[in-house]
Length: 567
Image (tube, rainbow, N blue to C red; front, side, top):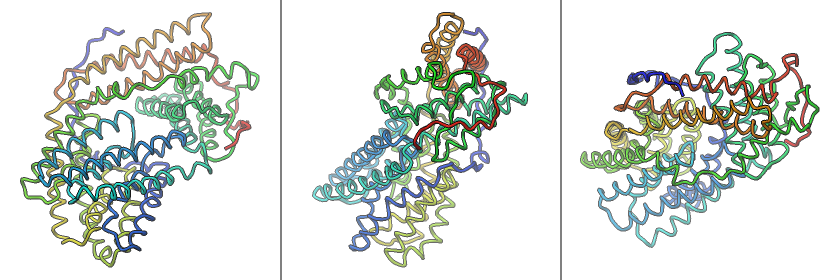
């Protein structure tokens, strides 16, 4: 471990303009956008035909589950979507029963805040998202303030469950057409980011940002491929070999052909055969080629960490969420608001991995909501032409939110805000001016009070997590270096050590970035983090060369050998 003296960490300047800068849209932005429309439309239109549009809020709770798990393989998606539907129903049940037992607004806000904290912690621990806990919190908080009787609760839950089952079918619908679509997209992203990093490195302008992005993309690809545990297939093994090649490019960018990586990425995105990674120095299908995936098979066999062990580090975020949501709701009540859950949900949406990101989300939320209320005022005359027009406006807002939110959260909020306001009109029309005023006030209250709670509850354990991540990288590097230098090391041990070190580097960067955005804590060992990353990258390169995985520099970039696999 390096003995470099830790350098003090300066608090980052709070971004404003940078927080609003637009990025590139997601490659699959249309999937959640179309899925939510397909999930919301049939139940809502059926209720229009029956003249019971007042019940659409309950069916929409189940339909919104179609927003989740689009990046997961279909075998894993089936389980995740089922758990999301059950989680939605659980939060909805607590809210409905509470609303039927009391109309005390303080009690309702308190229950909503505790639900929001629980939903935040579980979604972060299980990495369910986007949109993570925000949708669950919006549904449970809103229904807390809808008058109920205990006799109505089973029927309302049944409506949400039926819509949730339909959302599950919508989410699984593409599986027969492209059974490996999510894995293909993740693999293509890993190859493209590795190619971008290799280009900067070969040009003598190596970028730490490009390297971190490439490692994160490769790690995400492995997470996607490993999500379908105990379900190996020929296509998935071929994709795993491509991700191995992306890892090799990160370890030795100077020996990588970026054009070849991009050609593989383009081929993977389609529905044809998966490109072959065969090294001309080996016989195709040889034992050496299969050895690349030994570590992958070993990792697939390892059971995931228990949920309780993943919840521990999230305690500060959960406390922030509970305190911020409760205080935002109480202040909103004190100002005479009829819908304090808007302030509660605004606060719940702010909390990110650290205070700097939380501030950025607060700026994005306020700007998006303020523009969104103007859009609501513009579409209200159209929405009030009749029940069908109201449903069509809601569908348009759902589509717009998912289509735009990938570019920046504030841009998606421009559509989310009128969507939330239109949902309040499902039981009956309300004064537009009153809705707009209440929403603006609750947005400002939620953002200010929510961020104040984040300042009050700091994550003082962030520095200790960085120290643990540094220790993990050092141990993984020492093990990989020892195996790379040992003449009797087996291919399986080398591959497992390389995969372990790569994962530790990704975790170190994510942990250090999250801790750097926290305030009121001891100085972080930034120099040690950089030195540890550099040493790990050198060891990864040595391990790759020891394994003989480097591509032949003389191989053309247009090689088009293919695996005999089904799409």
